[in-house]
Structures are given as structure tokens and as C-alpha cells.
Amino acid sequence: MFIIYNLIGILITLISPIIIIYRIMIGKEDPTRFTERYCKYNEINNKDSLVWFHAASVGEMMSIVPIIRKFEKNKKIKKILLTTTTTSSANLFNKFNFKKTKHKYFPIDTNFFADKFVKFWRPNLAIFVESEIWPNMFKRLNSKRIPIILLNARITNKSFKKWIRLKNFSNNIFNKISLALPQNMETSKYLKILGVKKIQLSGNLKYYGNEIKRSKQTSFKKFRKYKVWCAASTHYNEEIIIGKIHKKLKKKIKNILTIIIPRHIKRVKDIVDNLSVINELLMPGGSQTTNFSSSFKGSNFSSNMSLVASASRSPISVGSKSGITVLDLRSGNRKEQFDNMGKSVPIFGSDVTSSEPLSGDWEGYLSRGRA
Image: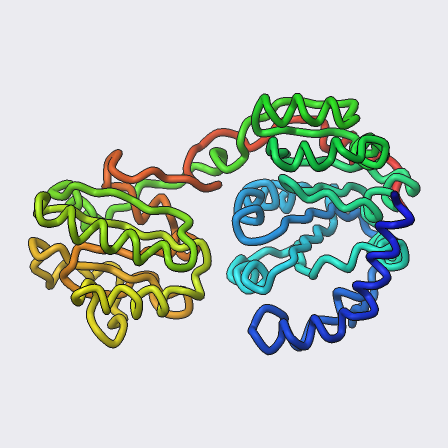
């Protein structure tokens, strides 16, 4: 099965220039950094100890930020490498003031590029987040005796059924994981069947983080006057359905406030435009950017003012008087934004609670072999 997988990888490599050009055109690839997919870097890597994290995109990256911050304080760790696959995560990374940590894009998973990547970066420890299983990279890391940790591991029933169909292939991948830290019992069971030898149930990492002082800002106390419901991680066209539901509910519940948290922040303008046609649910022509802290001070909040988040500008923008709110929880301080909203809105993310993110013999893994 590895032969077939590698043949597919070679085919993808051959057509990858076309794919990358297309991705650049639609804004999903960085035209100045796409060569990182081929392990071409404009720098020289030294032999200092290095911990490598790989997360797919924004959500996974945010969940490990507290751990990265903790590792940055560890004097034994000289460098930290974080790889992701999306431009949105790369752009968000630039907002953090990490000193030891640098960001790169994850390479194409072929034997050639996996080998080239490991030889260049020479990690002491490789940590993959959630469902990031890369056969050739795992194989190369294992051959160099570099420990592999699957952090906040998540295997759904659907993905498990796909892996189990190729049991020998799957076992040959999963048995290379040195330690798996699943986020739930279901994943723990699946990982054991798939061949992981050492499993320690850790819970969902997104509920852990560093303690953050409560905001002195009291503007959100006004939310308590409203019946709030939240549509989180919405996708294309779902906001129109939510808007129509909101419109019907508002006939019976005058003080309803609907919060929309889109899955992809680049869609905010499209969401505003789409909702504006539903009987002026949102102000025609988009949103008017304003400062978050002053959004309520000079406003008559009894009109159910709508808010629209803008990732590229200020955290919150005024939209209209409809009572629909679109928020970007990836920018700014999520806990701080919602401190005073009570239990009306569920809060998820790495910066919500004050528990230690993980415990374990990290230094033991760091002291093991490297490339």
C-alpha cells in the first residue's frame, strides 16, 4: 500500500505547480513562500535542539499556543518549529510575538520531501496535532529514531472505518507513534485497534490554557437583556438559513440576539452582503468599522445593534439594528470579549480555562535520538 501511496504522491508532485498557481490565484497560497512545500528554505539550520509542532490550520494551532509559550520558557529547548498547511494560520502566527518559534508550511508528503525536511530541520521531537497522520513523514521520523507524539488526538468513527479497511497499512503507520494523547475515549479505543502502543487519555486540549485576567470592560453586560443564541463554525449559505430563522423568531421574541461565528473569517463580507438582502437584516453595503470598546457607549442598545467582525481591521464592526451578530473569535481575546455574557454563549478555545495544558515527561522525549 505504501507503493500506491507514494505513486499518488509522485503524481501530485508532478501536477503541483498547476495546483499551486491556482491556489495563488484564489488566495489560498502565499506566492512568496510556496517553495516551502518543496522544502526549499532561504536560511541555514544549526544543530540546536528543536521541537517540531505540526497543526493543520487555525483551530489546531490556537489549541497549542499555550504549550508553545511554555516551551519557549524552557531553556533546554533552543528552537521551536511550527508547520501548518493554510495561509490563514500563517497570517495568524505573525500576530504572536514568539522568540524561539518560527513558522513554515508543511511539505508534500512523499519519501523525497519527508527525507529532505527531516534532514534539514533535525527535530528532537515531532508533535502532530489532532488528526494529522502523514505516512511518509512518520516513516522517516521513525527511521531516524525521532519520537512522535499525537497530541489532542481525534479519530472519528468515519475516519476509523477508512483506516481499518487497510489494516496492515494503518498499523504500519500508527505503530510508529511514540505517545498518543487522545481527547476522548472513542479515539483512545480506535488508536489502540490501529496499533498505537502507548496511549494516555488527556481530554480536549481546546479546554486548557493560561489563566487570563477578567476584563474591566463592562459593555457586554448589556447582552444580559437579550435572549442570545449562537451559530458557531458556520459554512457557505448556512448564514442565510440562520438569518431567516432569526427573522421569524424576532416576531415572537423581540429581544433576541443572534451571534454568527463563521468558520472562515474571509467570508465575513459575503455574509454581510447575503444577509442584507433578507429584508435588510443587515445594513446594505456592508459594515461600518468602529472600535470595539466604543461600540455600545454611544449607541441605543435597545435596538438590538448588530456587530460584524473584521479580521483585517478592528475586532468588531457595527452592522445594523437587526439583532444579528457576526463575530471572529480568532482575532483578539475570546475570553475577554465574552466575559460578561454569562452562559448564553458557549465559549471554546485554548485561552478559556486556567488548567495546565498537559503533563508528561517532555524532557525525556527531547533527550532521545534525532536525525
